[in-house]
Amino acid sequence: MPRVKRGVNALKKRHTVMKLAKGYRGARHKKIKAAREAVNHALNYAYRDRRVRKREFRQLWIARINAACRELEISYNRLIDGLTKAQVEVNRKMLAELAISDRSAFAEYVKIAKSHLTATAATA
Image (tube, rainbow, N blue to C red):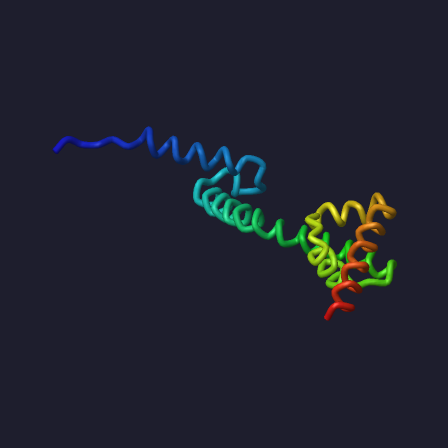
């Protein structure tokens, strides 16, 4: 069986890792073992945090909507319940943006939600 020389492939692999480790401090951008470890951790954190970011933004939007709701004397869950009963489809990102930038439009949504909450309470 002929001998297989793998120098080119190994060098290519190391080169890829070292490119990813560019800008890291100390041995992490110079030595392959430290660089590989740092790059693997960084890639794992990036993968995980792409998912966590979605959760964190949703939490932020809900907190903003709730704060604006409290000023208009309704709770967040009552607002969402009222909008659902009114069959108004607006996502939390847009509601949060309206709560910050356009208070009058947000107040209209609150009015719609309140009216449908009282309408369903009267029929029940």
